[in-house]
Length: 220
Image (cartoon, rainbow, N blue to C red; front, side):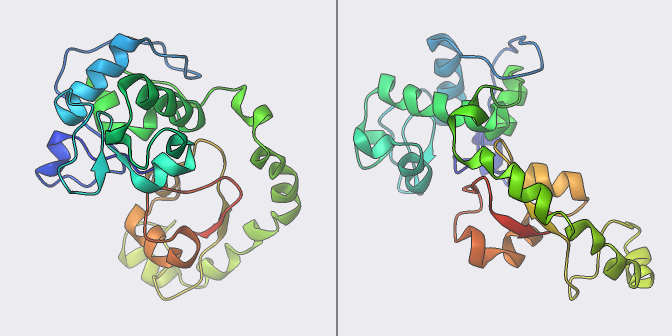
């Protein structure tokens, strides 16, 4: 998703979401659970200094720093064109939808600082039509046969000292985006940089690397 990187990321760290400098909160790892208003206030404090109407012109808006595309994708335009024009409660409502779909990993840096952990809510797939894609995904999963192609490139792969990475000039295996995925999470699982995945699949993902949708097929 497209949530602005946290304060530390502005100093140079590239992330798909946000970072925060506050006291750690302890939440049990596992399925994401609904957060109270205080938790969102802490996240906003990290993300925007707690200013729910902030718009600095950097493409991210409001207390939780939504991009316009993410705000629209999760229904925010029902309240305002961009998050900074909506109220705190409305921004939290949209943030809860994002968290339910992607877990706290949607704000990787800030959630780590605050000790927020958890994957998407398990009930979410049942309410979204996209999870019906797992059926086709299973049927289309002859894609794993493609590792035969990368194996032919063992020599260049060994030069990188990472057997899971194929040479950038060669086709990659297909991966179907699932609910809760982020480019960084997919990249970590396949031992590649998320920028490579975005560049290779720009025609599928578009300009916003933070906005990927369940059912999209990516070359990794």
